[in-house]
Image (cartoon, rainbow, N blue to C red; front, side, top):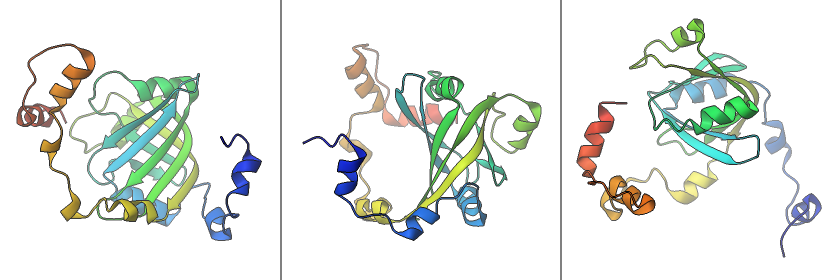
Length: 201
């Protein structure tokens, strides 16, 4: 049977423990701030006005997402494919969910909040030190911050070196896109793709 009500869902599970409820914060404490300062990777989740979802990975040096204060984050835009899915969603709904990860650490951090796109000089200048000046900055007003336990990454053994998968088990990105789109263009090698990306990071 499909579970189509909160009552049916809750009947399958015990109530959450007090610590699991109370650890959801309304601002970034010292631990959340330190986590973000160490993180080189965040997934930005968003939706458009119709509810269509998107999750976009963003990366940079540790701390590339700037902590302005306990309630404000800045994420620099970086060159991508120009679809602008996340950006358009932010314009449409003004909401994002963020999921921070630190290599080698199994705990993760979730941050939800209101978002808007900014080209203000003081926001661009706050990102000083990036390889290139961003066109835009995503400004997030933090509403929820929640350190997540290690179970999911422990189950996945995500950081275990012996379980790393060779890139050769999949076709190259160009080959996969040719197959998906039916647009038959010469598919560059994986090495050529990495060299092209490196020039545009």
